[in-house]
Length: 134
Image 1 (tube, rainbow, N blue to C red):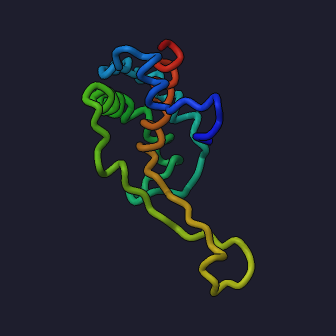
Image 2: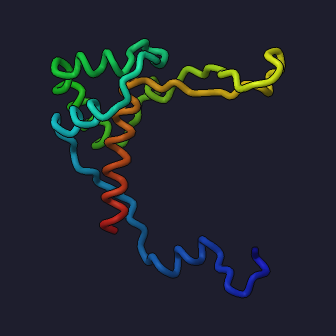
Image 3: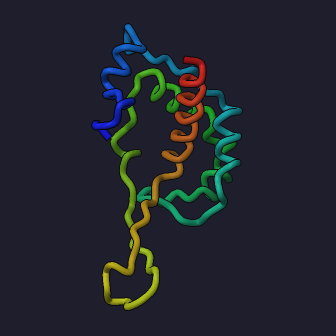
């Protein structure tokens, strides 16, 4: 692609179009209403990550944990720190088809914690809005 007449190096393009990089992204805090809405939008499943908390358990316990969970998520947004424990997932092999003893007939799935899923949805919404505004 570098031989094309219209090709512009991505770094050159960025330097030409953005004089000063925006190094400080400030994401708006979330509310208990937003967190509850996201929790209720999750698929009701009994599968779980390493913490053994399924979305079903999270939904049932939501009224009791919304305030502390929102506080934690807002701290994560303001500090920019995503805790290492939320980065962990449980990898399980799922059989596709063919010979059951052939490892290539399995596909890996990652089981994230329910808390990670909620925060990632919050973060996605904030980043999407930020990028659309910029």
